[in-house]
Image (cartoon, rainbow, N blue to C red; front, side, top):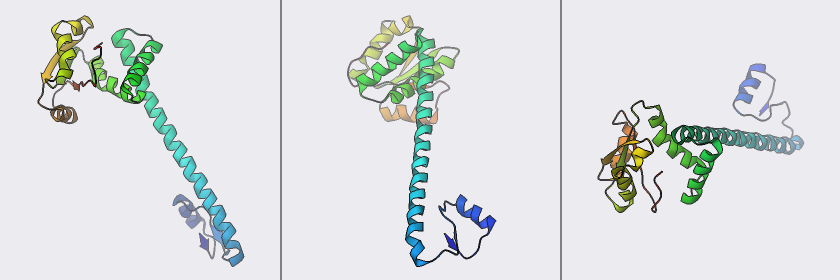
Length: 186
């Protein structure tokens, strides 16, 4: 920014607004190019710092989600920290998704369950072939063997399950489970 005279309040307001340089009485033709080059370099450096800060914040949030999911798995299944991590990592590799996505899934389905005193888990499903492992697991008592009190909620579409989750229709969370291919339930 080129100005005729210095003003401390205006300088501070300019810097707060993102001005990279405050040039007093410096609007001479031979100085403009070098001043603008410095301003552009400073702006790019600041933009890079902002980008790095956002990435660091995002990475920290992802790490918190993974740590919470590890804790949930450790409590629910009696695993060590490394076993819980390896279980999530294996699931992420198997499904070709990021570790953070698996951690979010664990947190959304089991997080509230862990806090729930009656230990009831409502699972929404669509009566399709991919729901067979879930139906068999509940019918044969496999879920109960793992300490899960499961209530199956049949829906007509995945969008119904999504809507129930988003509006918080019931006091207990409904988890939606869909498999891309047959997998072990627990």
